[in-house]
Picture 1 (tube, one colour):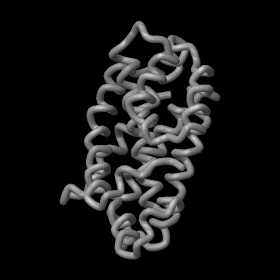
Picture 2 (cartoon, rainbow, N blue to C red; picture 1 turned 180 degrees about the vertical axis):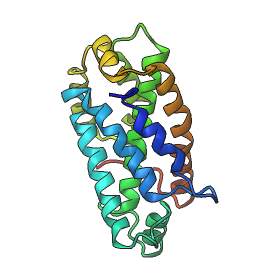
Picture 3 (cartoon, one colour; picture 1 turned 90 degrees about the vertical axis):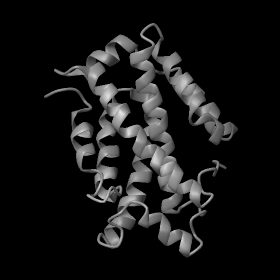
Length: 202
């Protein structure tokens, strides 16, 4: 494998925005998809997160594919639902984007923990990231399932070896977190403008 498992995502981020600075639907979703193989390396501990992310990407992609020129910009998927008053539906693209962004917030926090706290176990790094990001939006059931899954977190040293490939994993993680975080922040700000950034899991 050339470089680390982040190589594809780092490459994809270069084309996420239009010349006008707007986040484009397909390139953004492609970057999220590039992170799925990284999640795979966590094994069973991240099965829930992976299916959640995969499901939300599919939901947004299938709406995008109905009219690629109309939905070329990521936020047009939300705008349409705001106008038709369907944004708060649990099956909406708005809901999909919100939870996709939150799951990515969790992963960015986790990757940061892995390079900033070398003495932490994988389980500790996962739990801290979860508490900082997803926990407040989860109900008791989701929270319990997540806590249980974290007990299956892989050995940290082995995990880092597996995702390193032939590249500099620390540099790639830093680059990924630095470049991806502002996009996630932009998503939150956009959703907050319509009062859609606070939705919780049932």
